[in-house]
Image (cartoon, rainbow, N blue to C red; front, side, top):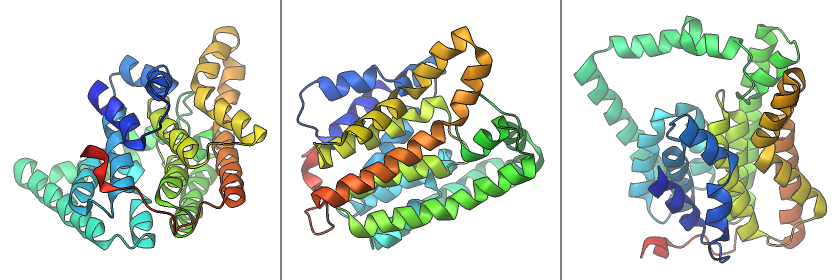
Length: 287
């Protein structure tokens, strides 16, 4: 986890010395990842690497995406990004490698494991996870649940946000340079995910670092909302110590912070001309 965490920051190549590493290591995503012993640093690295290098290194990017199927909620919009970017080699490598992993799992454990997984979505542990409102679960459906919306409407909203974010990812891939497109796509993928917990916050951290790389000068509004998004889980925990009800409702508005950062980032990109004809990320990062 530590190695992949450092690699994730290294991928972005922010020329700010040790500070990007320090701020990420001290971030909420790292706190929750290591506190709950989650694989978020590894999955964040795989996702960031695949999106940044899907054109230059399609084989490794596709294989990274196939391994990332251990967290399928992040991959909902990855095909949209690859198709919009016309990174067909990475697309097909990911498709075939993922299919191969699925067939291997069936050969080793049998088809019932897949039947159990699918059943868990409709009446098992995953559906229960969606129905119950959790403070540290930050999704559109969860936010509506915390505000008292019934399960059916929550599910409908969660399904509706996916195509909306898909359009945003397509637009980003078509209009901005690779780093800018990846930053916005990471934000959209996190928002569209049907499961997104505080330990997944590293995805937001990588998105913010990429935005700094692309657009070093930010408006005050973007600084404020990005800072709030970066530190939101910690703010939640501080509020929780004083009033659990306020913390519960505060967590329900975290997706609004993500949407605000997305909108303000697009405005900033437009003002500073981060077009697609800029050079995309080179393959020399690991050379």
